[in-house]
Image (cartoon, rainbow, N blue to C red; front, side):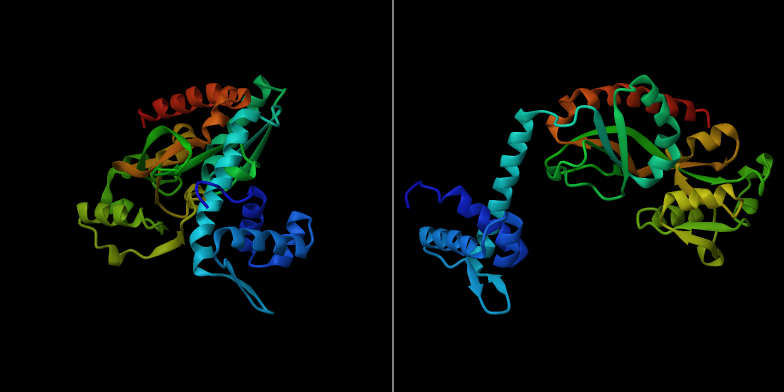
Length: 304
């Protein structure tokens, strides 16, 4: 075989058939006949002198050689697509599609987004709230706002802020002078954040105040920050939250910070996208509006 490569078409047909585990489904996706798929696979197998599929009447499975080859072909086609996107530019310059975590979308971004749309009426902003990182290769999202720990493989990530965890409750259930008294705070109903990275923080907090956590019975348990904050606002108890998500509530007095407690959050906010997306005009316009406003919001929190 030397340094030659098999035909690109046969590699593409192999990848689709392998991902779908079916020549028939691959033919439908590729808009060709099943015989055409079989022909391309046979061509590839002849070139490689290896069987790539174990065929039976009921199913099509990869051989060991096929399993070894598939991830390399997938990575190659992903790189092809990224390269084409990098030089082809933005296919939808008038539409900005943002994927953002649910909590940040509803609690921070949505109330402020009309300001951006007023500044840039030529852009249509489409929000896709999601707690999962999107597949940018599908071309459906331009920019993502994530709360996590970074290391988004193959993507450019821009860390926005270092967040803090704090305790909050509604002033309807605790007066400001009492908000610093642990004997009163820990008598309030407890709204438990069940997230795996938050539980150890709360356990340590209880130890520091010599509170036996086993004596605390949560009135509400959730891992969704929106639900936790909504229940705190409704006066159903106290909870631990990311400071960034309750910025407005702290400033307007609808929530009180308790016990002067704060500690670094295990999560930070990131802007995430493929490198070429950050070169698009619509993304640059959003960044130039978003970043100063976000930092201003966090600077204002220093007093709380």
